[in-house]
Length: 236
Ligand code: GLP
Image 1 (spheres, protein in one colour):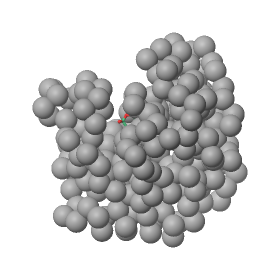
Image 2 (cartoon, rainbow, N blue to C red; image 1 turned 90 degrees about the vertical axis):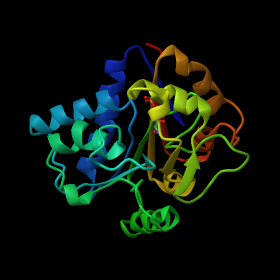
Image 3 (cartoon, rainbow, N blue to C red; image 1 turned 90 degrees about the horizontal axis):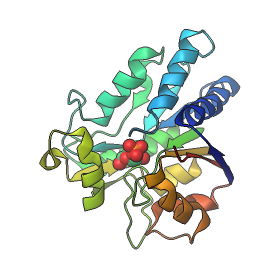
Image 4 (cartoon, helix red, strand yellow; image 1 turned 120 degrees about the vertical axis):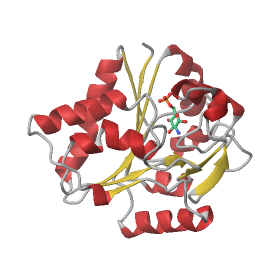
């Protein structure tokens, strides 16, 4: 594991964008695994800057996002599809038809999960998976449990996740209680994993996840078994 500590969110974002840019430049049809939350916002802004300067071309990229809230469609401004369109896809030259986010409004979420995994497999897997980390150690929406789940699946969100994510909603009651998330298989099969985290609040979970025991009670700890993982952490 490559653990990099930097002293500002700006440096974290610049470094993360550079790593993603290198993958895009180095591959003919790169598959980008993307994440939501506040952590990647700076990274996306840097990628947009690079695109605007003519340094990056997203036309051959495909993107697959980690997760989506159940019951929110892409028009809903709290959905992860909306977040991606607003913060990245609408600002770069990626083909919208090649951007994938699990459908949280699918009538059959288990078939949606199976189809999502098959689609990733058919794309040849993910070249780089960008991740944030929840305060409880979740990646995507893989919450602490007594097992790791392999497939893209339906999850019941933890109280602490609902609490943490309520900052984006009008009230805590508006936060969906369920989500659909990529499971550990597609994440662990990604050729490269890049996890970014910032703020003092994440310090303890980062230590547990990357320097503690590998346990499904700290879902991100499974990444210790990945052969190409970079963690960038800024306490500020
Ligand atoms: C959400 C997302 C995760 C994200 C986490 C941390 O729950 N499902 O993918 O990593 O929040 O978010 P933030 O970066 O805002 O701390």
